[in-house]
Image (cartoon, rainbow, N blue to C red; front, side, top):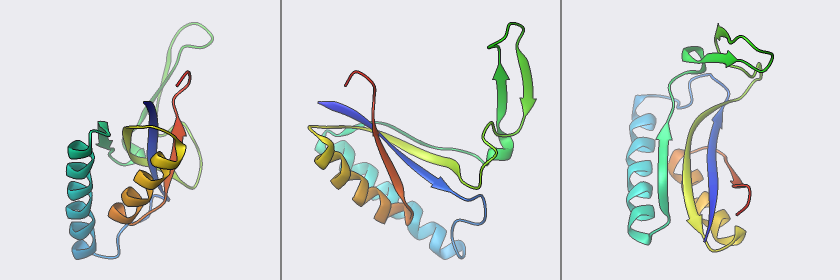
Length: 115
């Protein structure tokens, strides 16, 4: 089976309208994670802290340079992800649709190289 990265992006503002909606999303994501484990599609998943917590290390030109903040200066940042196994892209897209509904946001699907 092929492994896919299902990534959740958000624009850095409050992702959920209020605490109740956030708790609803957390419960839905927990249920989705349980479904992934039960189905055998689960490989790994994680939520990330705010982009402002990021540290960038660049050693591409020799001595490492360490800076605060996210690498990408863009409107949207990575907020969390799943790594799943699926027989093909259509199956991965079906899994992503469930993940999108659970977290109440868009989910990008990308296969790993060599898969």
